[in-house]
Image (cartoon, rainbow, N blue to C red; front, side, top):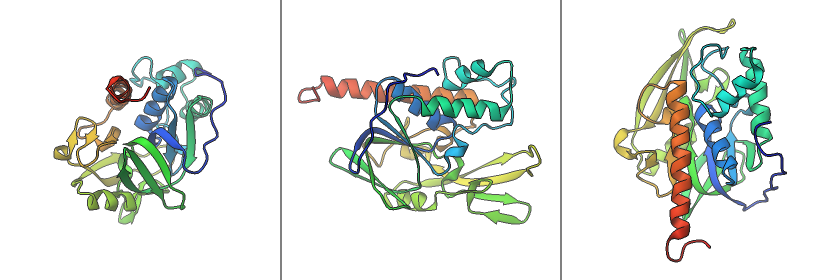
Amino acid sequence: MFGPSSPRSQPQPGHLYDVAVVGAGLAGTELAWRLARAGRDVLLVSQALDSLGNLYQPTVADVDFPPQSVFALTRGRIAPDTDGWTFHRQLKAEIEGTSGIHLLQSTVTELDEDAGRVTLSTWEGPQLHAGKVVLAVGAFLKGRLMIGDTMDEAGRLSEIAYDFLADDLGRAGVFLIGAEQTAPAAEGAPPYEVRFLTPSPGDLEGFKLKRFDHVYAVGRCLPGTPTYRSVLGDAARLAHELLADELLAADAPGGPA
């Protein structure tokens, strides 16, 4: 394993995480790993943990992962093998073994910011709490997946979209705009197109959602054409920004001791 092996805490109801990352794709996985390695208490919540760190293709051959990302380190660990499933198993084992990451399979439906923290409501019922929240939901924000004449409420094959969360962001005043992507056929799966929502550029200040004090976005939630290098690079930059913000808060008069 690349990460520390000391046991993680066992969060109880009402536990306050330093950061909650919603979505465990490329950006969310990289961000959670970097924050936990820096000693932060991180919740990484996803609707499907079996898709943690899901790649854009079935192999890691010739993929441009940034050096020192958990993705580059994992590829080096399995080399010379380049099989995507072998890579996924090793990546998930690394994330599960990193102290400070609490993996949770759940569906976040609402965000409520109050008194310097964010409460995340879930479709399953329990509420979660964090000082900061990062949306890394990729193509799942009200995603609509189309295969031929068939449309499904999903961001990826067989994985449901975040409709409730998109509606909640809209009620909070976040202006959402349409985006789309196409996935080519792979290993017997047909090609498909996904249309989804993202915060408009005018509602973003860097990674931060302007309508909130402690909510950020990364990955496909940001404008632009995503690549492995751009998405993982953004996750690294956001991790640095969040850690720097905490240091500034700690140094401020009346800040945490």
